[in-house]
Image 1 (spheres, rainbow, N blue to C red):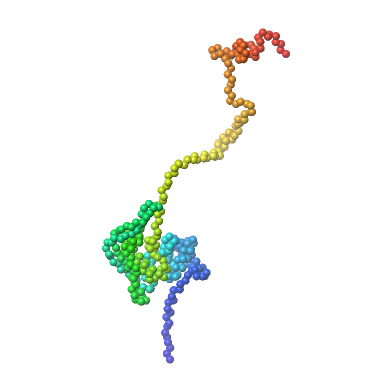
Image 2: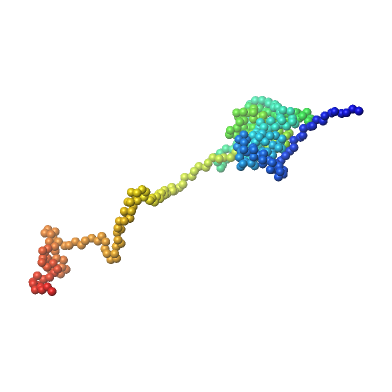
Length: 320
């Protein structure tokens, strides 16, 4: 009888797709993991702090579905105007490491100088129109290809060219890298097209960051010219500040003395204030006071004995 001594070799378990949103237990466990991630300064600013716990949970969920470390998702996931997108170098790395294809290669063909027609907006703000413009460029075509391991078939992605970049409006956009780095942009775009066509599940159906940037709608943010008002606004004089309280011992004593001073009494009813004194009639040459009797009698001198109008011949005056 022969005893078998064969040792069974355990095969590696396939990665289990886990979503942190699938159950309450997974959600709680995901929060504990994200707490450690959000407290690290090695992750981008969009994932740091408790306020970005939601972003970290989404990144963790995507990492679990793709079977890659969460830090890799956080470092390569870009959000442009609310749309998540992958960095172009991550797209190539994910396709090369997924195990479905051989490493991606690129085939480039130089076609020389060509004239390309594209459309652009022109004219003042509020009255823009589309116009067709012709431009001459050095056209280059680039195609991404790889061998599928399951079948041995060579798979080719859509061809990308400089003429396509011009016609689609990518080439002449402000800040475009197509002018300064055409070869690199061609390979990045060709790899993104290959992945979206043959392995969309690897990229979670999301485009590359370069694609999103090129497809963003151009908006005119030029501020409108300020209109000159017909009538100048009246300048309002600033209100005078109220006098503050006196500060210091000397200022307080001065204020107390001012308060103790007698104030002017109110005028009595019937009393004339600031009335002009009546001028007494007199002779301008001699200075003698003249009689003001309305009957026109003889003038009385300034030295008359009877200034009250008593007759001079009346000497019989007996005091009581």
